[in-house]
Picture 1 (cartoon, rainbow, N blue to C red):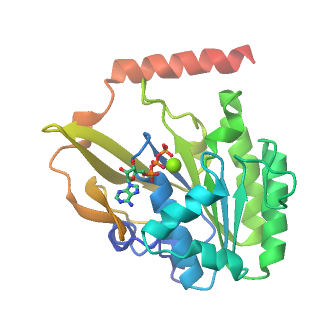
Picture 2: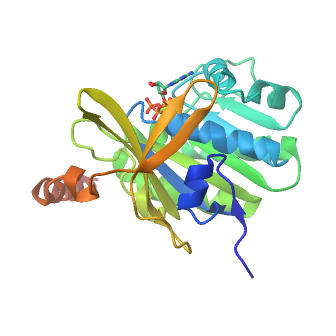
Length: 263
Ligand SMILES: Nc1ncnc2c1ncn2[C@@H]1O[C@H](COP(=O)(O)OP(=O)(O)OP(=O)(O)O)[C@@H](O)[C@H]1O
Ligand SMILES: [Mg+2]
């Protein structure tokens, strides 16, 4: 049986993934601020709407209004999909008591509960879930990241969700806030940015995708008004050129271990 793959809504990224993300996977989307994580999640959601999937989008960093207005700039009528009952945007930033799709506490149990409520509301069938970001749920206890993401994955996998979970990177160390989630995730799509020749450039790389012969190259991307994320070409630098020196990585691992032992 061939694996069913869901289009991400970005043709270039589908190409890197051998067609798309296998149904039921939980994929971590990581990267520094402003690299395109949220915009990629919007493409994935909008593609879901177009294919008749049920779509649930949890936003912790931006309000629902901000997400819908950003989508509108790329001609994705997510607001319309919400009005038609095809999409639920769960606002975990504004936390309004009067709003049934508002999340007022950032803990994994409440997250799972409201996501399942949204799924029941949308109805039976193939579903997509975006959690933007997952890091917000363990900001005050980073050592719990692995346990929490395992819990979320386990519960949601029974509900026919294919999940994008955003995990942010600390700018100073390039260390993922979501340390640990990367192992639980079935795939990792990593966004990056560098200043080259005085210009900000963005890149994307598939670092892991289980059961997939994926592209190993890093690609330059651009974000275009009216269009969104576009994959341009393979980058002319090697991943090793931009990775942290191994000494730094080892130091981070040691520090993290200590932190976990202290708990
Ligand atoms: N309409 C637009 N046209 C062109 N570029 C845009 C447009 N809207 C946003 N951008 C670009 O996209 C960037 C934001 O991308 P995005 O929100 O996906 O980042 P992110 O990786 O989610 O960051 P964060 O971790 O801070 O949430 C902006 O900084 C801007 O450069
Ligand atoms: Mg974002």
